[in-house]
Length: 104
Image (cartoon, rainbow, N blue to C red):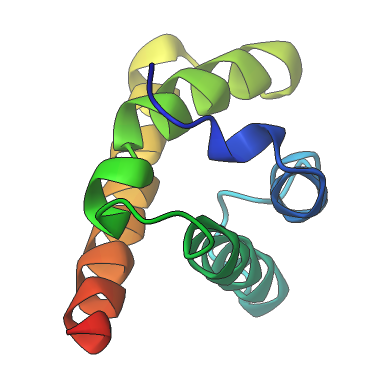
C-alpha cells in the first residue's frame, strides 16, 4: 500500500492552506508560495521513511485529492481544472525529482 503523505497532519495543513483558497490556481505570488510550502512539507516529512522519495510522493495521490478539492470549490469546467491539476502535478513531480537528487 502506498504511503499516504496527505494524511500526515503537517502536510495536510499546508495542502489545505494552499488548495482551500479560491485563488490557488491563479498564479498569484502568495498562492505560489503556499504551493511551494506544501511541496516542501511533503518532501520534509516523507524523508522520515527509508523508501525512495520519488516512490513515496506518488503524484496519483495528489492528482486524486486535487480533483476532489477542485470539484467542491472551483467554478470552472472540468477540462480547465484537469489542465490546472496537470500543471501542478508536473511542478510537484519536478520538485520531488530535484529533491531526490539532493539525497544522493
